[in-house]
Amino acid sequence: MSTSKWVAVVTGVISLLLGVGYLLLVQLLDWRGDFQPAPMGLLLRFALQLGGWYSSNVL
Image 1 (spheres, helix red, strand yellow):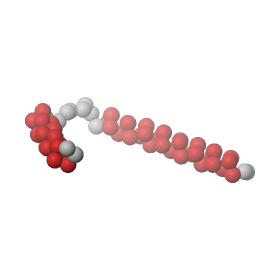
Image 2: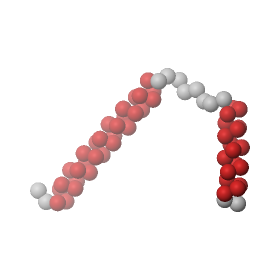
Image 3: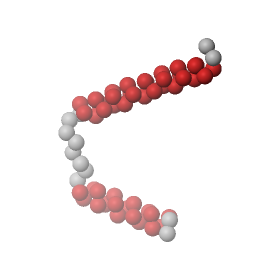
Image 4: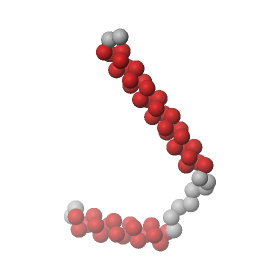
């Protein structure tokens, strides 16, 4: 086999492994049950902390 064929085979195997891994990850996340978002108080506190970090480090 030439080098280009080996590259194509290896790329195909990697692609298949990534696809199967993604499907397994989705099944695992779906198996956990309904998604429950974080409480709004925690979200607001995180946003304020992130905003303070952004203004002190970027601006």
